[in-house]
Image 1 (cartoon, helix red, strand yellow):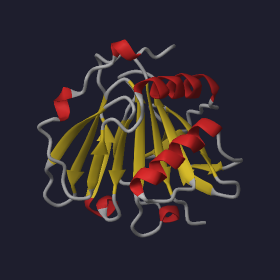
Image 2 (cartoon, helix red, strand yellow):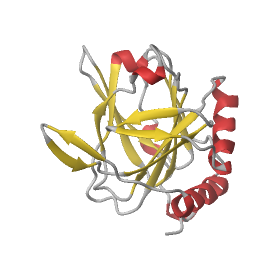
Image 3 (cartoon, one colour):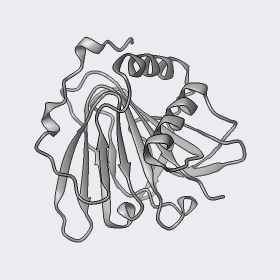
Image 4 (cartoon, helix red, strand yellow):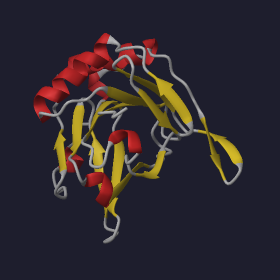
Length: 204
């Protein structure tokens, strides 16, 4: 499925959103044509997997497809599955390098999610696995159809909706994972795909 620039929403829905401290959103992180090419390449060339997760003794397929990569020698456990890196895809490495230059952060791995349509989703969670250290910085680069990124404060409970644009970047600074949970809710009317590249620094 090719991704066409003229089919993308202009993302005006974020203009009234004031993000809490610790979140930085860059809607035009990538040139639209480069973002198109990256989306099409990753969709066709990554080795996508759909691991299972056990909930109350029952196994369920994770409601999205995944791929994980990073520097050789890094490994990461997610949704009960151990991912071991064999190196970078060049396109992912190039996006990582751009993200590092902008954010002044360093990353050695990427968890990449493919939301095939609006039925695919991500439940409430924090990126607080022990492999990420005590206070990680996490960057998400979005490619493809716009999807809603929700986050809520653990104590105050206020929920925010941020519409992630094609080619955008979201930085969650150190400290965010301890204070907020985030999710990608299902959207039944969404018929096209989104790829999310989430860059992290694994501490092995």
